[in-house]
Length: 496
Image 1 (cartoon, rainbow, N blue to C red):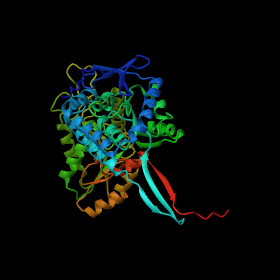
Image 2: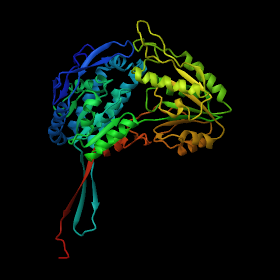
Image 3: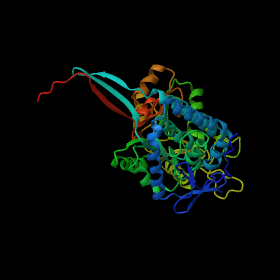
Image 4: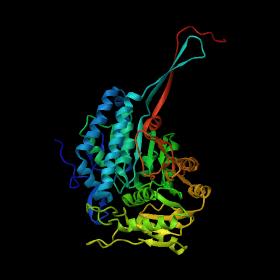
């Protein structure tokens, strides 16, 4: 039986070439529980020399790993998936302690992560080539699909387990090696946990390496490392633009999922019960700290007042508090910087003329001097240019904007630089489909809310929401190359 993976374990080492090792500097970074504000562990602060060692190990291990039969790579991914299931409860506890995840958030993370592992396990047998006829007499054309090489994964803090998994699992399934750099806010569940889980598999040393550290110290070296062939990044648009530019200097493929400003459009004939259910989940799950959560509620004027009233009642009734309380739905924001920014957006929006229906403040916690829990917040009388609507607030905040007709709803939804996800509730499915078709975003969900991720369905954003595509064959194409091999069977006539 594998050992338990606990918060009390030692987490202050890097994982390079199959070994746990201290950083060159010997320095560590404190990890804080956002519910209690207590330091719960320390992780290594890697240096650029540590990053170089990780890439050297990854490059050394990759060729032999890519030569393994598809069945062997599939077996390792299935072992990885089983390790997640074995440690399910421990992982949920780690997510609560490190990122303030509720039980619902933890269970969702496990479900999505294992779904990505299941899909990745099919990739080794799907890396099929092609046979193409030639315009040259007596020639045969073969097209092979091969691993890119070393894949860099830079993962975020909000859903660290599944957002790391969706890149790591397919990358190694396709025969690549990986250097994983998790967020400083989630170095365990976004990175070091992966090393411990993979130690329970038959993955060779060096195929996956994990470096923890501050972005200001090692971020540029990771994003722009010359050994990197693909850079998979999830995070803010501003940072993503910088990461993509560094990747581009080395001609590495950038796969960027960036910010969002997602609209939840509700027409006059929508099923209001379903729309409110979706709105409540889509705005407040994991405190709204989801790139595909609802950022703006765009609601027809005929049902606007009822929608605001019912959403306010639901928001005010949600249990908010510590992530260590099993009944909690809305937990802490990851840190004070994020908290202060989103509360600033609320204040600016009210100052601009909006009405604060509920929330807009922190929720006190016993024994915590400076609570990070923001009360579920609903704002009415909002316009699209107000701070809580035009910015990605990334919190438990629901600005509600009225519209008079479908054309205005579409214009409001599209009045943003982002295009990541969205939702439409309408009684007439043809109208809903028309709105969805006209929304300029990578994903739209009819009679649902925007937070959806299925590993076998392509996931991408447009505009400032990113470039490249995750999931299914789409991400397989990001992490593999095609090679054309031609065979001239008959003697060929040349002009000289």
